[in-house]
Amino acid sequence: MSLWLVTGPTVEPVDVLDAQVAVSFSGDQVEREGWFQATITAVREWAEGFTGRAFNTQTWDLKLDCGFPCGPIELPKPPVQSVTSITYVDTAGVTQTLSPSLYTSSLPQGPKAMPARVFPAYGQTWPSTRDVPDAVTVRFIAGYGDSPADVPEQIKLAIKLQIGTRLANQEGVVVGTIASVAPQGDEWLLWPFRVDL
Image (cartoon, rainbow, N blue to C red; front, top):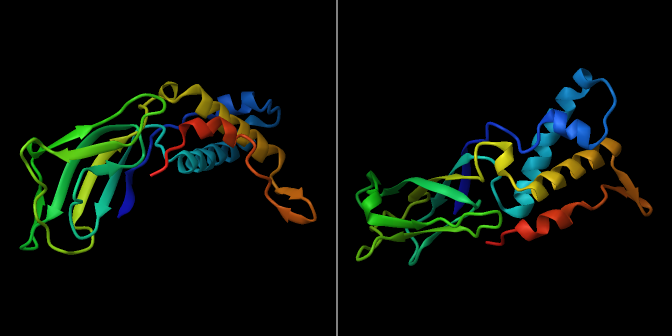
């Protein structure tokens, strides 16, 4: 199983001005705008990785080796908005697109939504595939929505706190006698959103 980002989000949960206000930044706004933008993206990617979620709308491909599972397909990166397509390599080696009438999806929504699942439709079974890598590809759209306002406030607060930590400690923090990066003190805000697959 592998996961590939097809289309990333077009917005970040926190914009540059919000980040600067949150950390009481009073330096040259234009000079540091690039740093803030890059840091917002890096912190969002870290927070998405920590929680196992997608924040703003993005498209992913889940690739399954050697065929369909015995039961449902579990999709990572909740909340999942929709399943766009399911393609597979049939036993003759030809790539086919599975008709949407042959499967159904359970797409939990909400701030702490669990992973989505895709099942064969009633009375149907998954088709046979060739025993090859990436035999099945499920394309899906994940994230809370297209706007920063769609992302839960607690997640946005964690991102802002982490940006403040990185602004204050751009060289890392010395902990004990060995130089290392300090633990993320704002992880506690993200723990309720964490998904374990």
